[in-house]
Length: 372
Image (cartoon, rainbow, N blue to C red; front, top):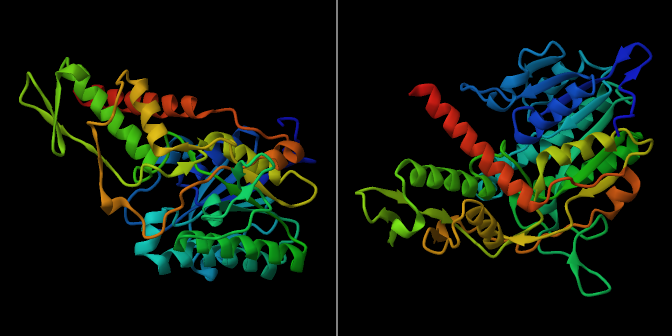
């Protein structure tokens, strides 16, 4: 796909990324800069620094960081009116934690649902009909709905109906339908990527995969720094003790271990976003690996990676982390993306788990060395 031209005549292609400071925004910025784009990243106003994931590009001459708030149409207008000739706009901004959306449904709606509509309306108001728009939709929109294949297999694709099971999913559905409406009503080149769970070292710490791999990293370092192995450990209540040393470590606390998810690597998925906007005709695509695993499976792979054969004594199931309405099974079909976009994921789950743990260990060790 690198054969796509990133310059039109002598004009360098340009892009705006809403949600630049998140996992996907940082990966997408890397991709676009590598392809020769000028990139403007929009971050929310914050009294604390939220640029850790894009720290490595802050001094890049072709990158500019601006403040903005997608819940405020005036803020969006101020950004876009100075960039009416921008080639591509990516909306990756969201309150994206499903559990949090039950506790903050109004905020989730304002950011995740209304925010997308605000951007679309501003594009129309400013007459930016040559700009291509990408909306980050979510597999959570499917909820408990799935399609049954001819051999009895369950999956979700572009034709599976939505049945959202959280305020987050409801907001994403609204944004998704708004893109379809604006595409048809105003002939916008606007596409949605229905992305299944995508993870990596830049994932937020409150997401279950990062929560697991962060704990694994701390557990392994605790073992290594004290010259312990798993045979030296005693499980007692919420703690893990060393038989030989008066030391302990808290157990990993998780919610529903039987939820199934289609997990991929975020670095793969942002490439699919970009390819969508290079197509002549806008459309919506499911982006996924086509495989599903339970959280138990993820735990198996993570613990085996550090040569720990079982996790039963190290994990506590805490009802506090259960959601009021669960989505039990997500497994996507990426056949349309493969056929029309030529996209397929490079990372499988084993590669993803090892990447997250290795990067976590490297970060911890480098930080430790820095402050010795």
